Image 1 (cartoon, rainbow, N blue to C red):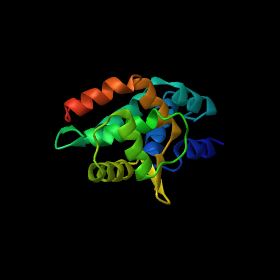
Image 2 (tube, rainbow, N blue to C red):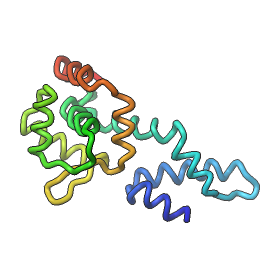
Image 3 (cartoon, rainbow, N blue to C red):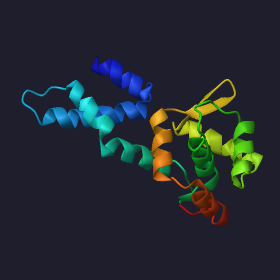
Length: 161
């Protein structure tokens, strides 16, 4: 049951499986005998550390030459603020970025989506992109609730956080 639930939560993403493994090891190490319980998964899923880990992963994987990569952050945040969970094509991203007033050209957009996929933040299948894990969308929406302000900052200072 624990393995199945981890697999469902992580969708097999190695960096997420590693995160869960580390947290479960830490929790089990505090017990005698050392055991992993389903309640440990509940604590991890509902705790601060998961959201912090995802946000840190996002920030660390949207850096270019030591500066925030504006195109990657814009794409991820615009998609996170989209109400539905449907996968998008590059054209969908371009149209959504334009509607939001984000300055991302098609070449930058393509590179940004490729980088987001390589980092494990997004999946690519049949010419469509989506977040690897739904919890990423929720974390980005909660961390950056006012999209116009963030986009304005990214547009005016391409190397801003």
